[in-house]
Structure formats: structure tokens, C-alpha cells
Amino acid sequence: MTTLIAWRNLRHDPIRFAATVVGIVFAVVLISMQTGMLIGFIRASAGLVENAGADVWVAARGTSNVDQSGILRQPAFYRARAVPGVAEVSRTIIQFTGWRKPAGGTESVIIVGFDPQTGFAAPWNVVEGSAEALAAPNAVMIDKLYAEKLGVNAIGDRVEIAERRAVVVGFTQGVRTFTQSPYVFTSYANALRYTNINDGDASYMLVKAAPGVEPAALAADLGAVLDKEEVLTTQDFAARTRDYWILTTGAGSALVLGAALGGLVGIIIVAQTLYAATVERLAEYATLSAIGAGSGYLNAIVLKQAMIAGTIGFVIAGTIAWAMAASSTSSPAAILLSPLALALIGVLTLAMCAISSMLAVRKLYSIDPTSVFR
Image (cartoon, rainbow, N blue to C red; front, side):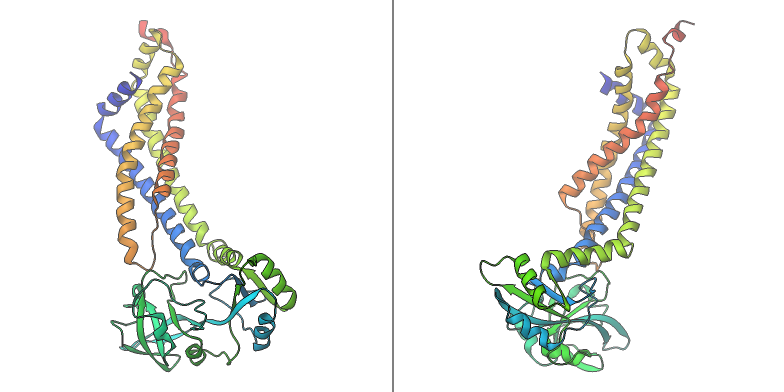
């Protein structure tokens, strides 16, 4: 019966009900978009580390994230190879440089030079061409998401990187970067030409552990030998990169603040509507109280009004958010919303509405049941 009364109370004033639902939809869409962007940024920020195929990363001391590195000198490579438990070591170059578009203009890009023999830090999600083709002189590969930005249309297009010739031999799909400076994959030998790094040196050394060797134990052994460098497992380096871009730069805080603002807007709108509706019907609530309805019964009516409005608003907002997330798959800034994330947002929406109902519920405590007999 409380559900029926709650529904009829909402239907009694359709304009106010519609305004409440619109407010909830706005709040939930804002929360969903901010959350989806945060998840997308988290995945993009450490995507290169997590997809490199290595167990341990050796970096210059003080390296805060994968995109901004120092230089490792050649002797460190040979010292790392001599450590027991090391199966393979690969030099990798990751460095910002300039890309000149065929039609003119330049863009900032991140060169990723990998060793084709080990394949560590090779491109993933390749949809055109092959990673093996990058061993050829001047060969590079970019992601389709950034093709227009870099002035590239198809395989075979010629460009300039650091005033040296390059030819596009393939494309990946969905390999995003947090900085929006696209990754340009090429071989280590080619990367030497596009950067200021000397032959034998590298930005990182990527290490594969021998069968049966734990990455954490290998990282400790490497750290004992490479005392001037920093040695981290893939998991630790990915976490450090995410923390830098999401926390240190403030990007994550801005997105969380935006989501919180959306929640606050939703709480205020729903609370205001429920309070006004409750005040208008105080006489009706007093009548119910006079005929024996307890405070729990009356509170349930108000709470269910909030739950009904919240459920309808979330269904509409969830559909909008899912469609917007799906449309972002072809955008450099992805909005990632998994079913679990949407379900959690749904729970948050109902909690938001429940909190909003408290203001109206407090008004019910002032009801005098005898007022209906005056």
C-alpha cells in the first residue's frame, strides 16, 4: 500500500515529478561521464606498461611515469643480463619528439622504440600491417584514433619525425595515451634516428624472468646489482604511472570533484521536491497518523517516492550514459563504463535519493494527528 500511495503522490503533480526525474538524470549522467572518463584515463595512463610483455622494468632513478624517462647507459644492459633468473633483457626507447604532417604543421608524439627480437613494448591491437614490418628502415606504426590528428590516411603515407623520413606501415586500434601525444611504434634502431639517444643506451630496460622466477624476487636481485638505477615490477611501475597522471597532476581529483558535484545537485533537487510535496500533504499524512499509521509507515511512503523517482531517473540516465560511452570508442578520450560500474552508479543513485528523503521525513515528525479534528 505504501508503494501505491507513493506513486500516486508523484503522479498527482506530473510537472514537479518530471522536474525531479530530469534533475536526477542530469546528476547521474554527469556522475557516469566523470566516472567513465576517470576509468578511461586510468587504463590509458599505464596501458603501455601493462601491454609491454615484460616482468620487470629498469628505469633511471626518479622516473615518475612511463612517458617521461631518463637515459640508461649501455653498461647497465650487460650487468642486467648477467643477473641469475633473467631470461631476456630488451632495450626500449620512449621519448617525446616532433612529427611533421605531410600537409604541414607539427604535432608532439611519443616514440616507442622496441627490440623486434624480444617483442617487448611492441604495438598491440594491430588492425592493419604487422609489428614485424617495423624492423624495416624508417617504418612506424600509429593508432587509428590519432591518424587524422597526424595527417595520415593509409599505409604508405610518408611523414617526418625529428626532421627524418618515416613511412607508416600499419595501424593499431584503441592504443590511447593520457597525454594525448600519440605513441609512434618503431624498432629500436629506427628510434635511435628519431631521438637524441646514443646507440646502446635506452630509456628503459625490459626484463623477462626465467621460468619459475618470481618478478618481485628478480626485481630485488636486479636492484642489488643496478644500484644507480630503479628496478620495478610491471605491476608496481604501472601503479606508479597511474598515480602520477591521475593523482599528482590533479586530473583524477577534478573528475572526482565533478562527479561529487553531480551527486550534490541530485540530492538538492530530489530533497527540495520531496520536501515541497510532503508539506503540501501534511494534512493527508496527519489523517493517516490519526487512523493509526505509525511513523515508519509514513516514512516508507516518502522513501518510496524517492526510490521510484531515482529508479526511473537512473534507467533514463543509464541509457544515455551507455550510448555516450559507446560513441566514444572512436575518440582519443575514451569513456569506459562496464556493467559493474553502471550497477554501482545505480546503487549510488538510490542512496542519493534516500539521503534526499531524510529532509522530508523530518517534516513528518512535526505532524499533530489531532489537527484533522479541528
